Length: 67
Image (cartoon, rainbow, N blue to C red):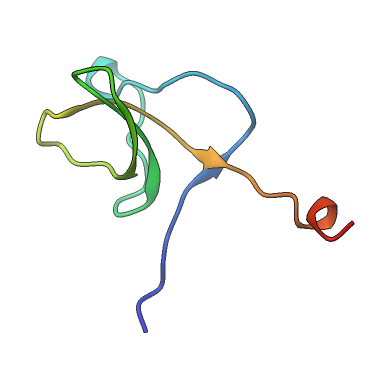
């Protein structure tokens, strides 16, 4: 069975731009992506030039979900 990876971070924040010196997400991790056309989508980062920014996925609060 394949392990599904994702990268979660704090609420809010702003896009990170690896081409401007920001870090890249973990290799193969599912993240929020900003395309060069300004469209927001999700998936793994790719250095093909189509993506210009990324954000971690929102963190889940499982304790609150159980309430």
